[in-house]
Length: 604
Ligand SMILES: Nc1ncnc2c1ncn2[C@@H]1O[C@H](COP(=O)(O)OP(=O)(O)OP(=O)(O)O)[C@@H](O)[C@H]1O
View: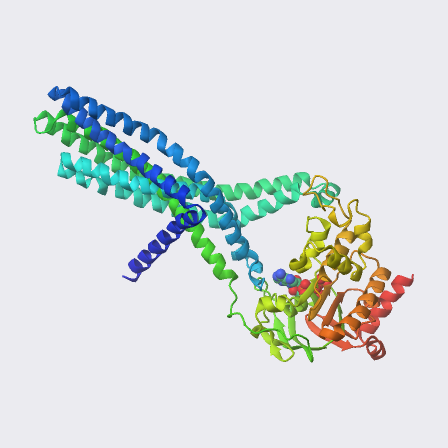
């Protein structure tokens, strides 16, 4: 009972999802949706009308009624034209609608992927699998829309065909039952194939990754130097073979299931024709009846075949919507978002209280029992070896991940109680894996505060704060120069130049409460990094007086962070030492040792 209820629930949800596609079309363009629907239904329903008109024509001919023959012949011709042409015109109408639908669902897909404040879902392999399948399936929404419109026409055509057959012999009303095995087995076949799509997603994802690597310019240097062309090709084709073998096996099983369903129907069809032919031979049915049954039953065969195909496309469409819902659930925050507003200025600062954190995809902890006090207005440097937890701590401070346990407090308010988007609006951050926005230079920097994306004065000021004005000065058309390979005339920048523009972007926000610079100068030499950090720290001290903003600098270079008010040394996910440069050097601990080693290395 519960199973049946669950099935019914799933069916209802699936139908609602599928119809939602039509509602989306309707919202985009009412007129075109109605025209497409009307043409599709009229074109499909015209086929059984042909059978009825043929019966009338045959009987009229046998009776010698020339007038009726002509009328019926006109109907046959009109219905024939409608069958042949309406679907084509409908296609013209829904083609554009389908494009708009793909656009609408791509926007939804983008929101699912990157619309939430937290980015924890990006670490889940299950989410990655769902995205891999969705990325491809969204492009198939066009087929889904066609299937949906065809299904509506087919439903009308099937009803009309069975009514027509039923007028010849009530037994023929049973013919729809013979179509059931084909529909049920068709659905089962699609489920088999859909499962295989999910199972093959990791291999598909791997193959796509290699394909992207092999076709993007950024990877081409290493691929050439490492002479990886053949290796990449071998691995790519092995992964594809793996994915296609899984899909192929499922397709074969699906085809067998569908064949079984079709055979059941063919048997019933032959029986139906025999019943009517025998009755006609006995003089109980007219010649027109025989014509109607032969034509209509043949149409039923075509309609059922079409229904099975359409059924598969609709099942695939339902799976797409199911996956979309799953992805939405996976990307949803584990606890309801807070609604609080961050303070206009920080008075106490940011408190990290016994924070422990592990990524979903890893059994190890990235942060263990971290407690820190980041006073308002302070410049805090975080140093530590690779993998010691610096970036993880920064991401927690930015609210990109929630701590597994422990609390981050902003002026005594739990970060979880603040509205995520209100907190991110008060952040200014430059990450080590910064984005290269291929836009005109003004916008590539201006997106740092999207309200002022084209404001050349603000952008200029932000670049000056980041000491990156010279990058733009070198460009042919200054701030208006398009950047990157997306444009035919786009300027290509060096890694360090891109990084300095990213820094400029960070300084677009004028009233942040937290400024994060996570290795923003990794492409620069140690001396330049030191000079820049000193400049930022001074700037931060001056301006953050007003907002109480905390500036967090992450660096590997122990020698360049000594200007910070507070230095946090991380090791193995824990806070190993905290203090000012002088205090830490005096204590003779890890900072002191590593500082001396690095200083000696730079001197030599
Ligand atoms: N997205 C992730 N999924 C799973 N584990 C991760 C992820 N990001 C980082 N880790 C792990 O968490 C630990 C801390 O990484 P984190 O990036 O915070 O270190 P880091 O000190 O910033 O290192 P680096 O100096 O190399 O940037 C490492 O063991 C790393 O493998």
